[in-house]
Image (cartoon, rainbow, N blue to C red; front, side):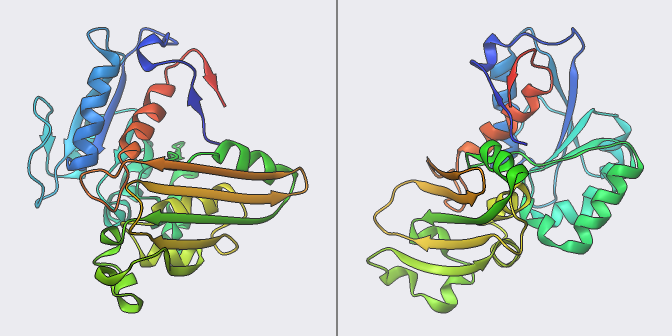
Length: 283
């Protein structure tokens, strides 16, 4: 279930004086932002320590003052309490099983990788067998707490709609059906299940998998991906209906340096990390 902090990160009271050790896979735009935000949130009285970052060969170093490694074994040897993936779906497939097998909690930012049923089953087996947890932050979507509550009472339907500027859909399967440079009005570029969306749009539709996992499942969750030249923000809308009631929740976020992703993703990850040592959480 999604959980949020009550009050600003700087006002949190830690559960103990122990420092939470965290490591990252990936040091691109999201990874470097996570490191920066953790530093700002904890300040001199830090309760979170980034003990290493696994740098992929094609990445430019964007995390000064943080120890870089080039192999997952080196990261695991440092025994962090949590390893955060922020390097894409391939990184989840490549490194996730090894992290969980080592007994270290694994946070998956590229949740669309979990739409691969074989991989998901493997990750869950490793987590359960080695006392670790597979964690999925909310990312650039809101309302997952309410969605999970409605699920317990029985959900009838869940629909997720992601709306972005046409340029955000370039280099994706949307180009097969739509000439993005000529789009002048709101246009649906994909409609199908959350599983289909997450696997076909690995950079744009990771949240589809997150919503699917929180609600009625990846195959029953309906996803619409929309190109709209009139928007300046990425929007994520969740609509659900169940026996207990209905949910409609929309979050509009500034795009990150990559228009395919939202700037709020890094903040969501940092919020989830800081929450692990917060004395007060609202769930």
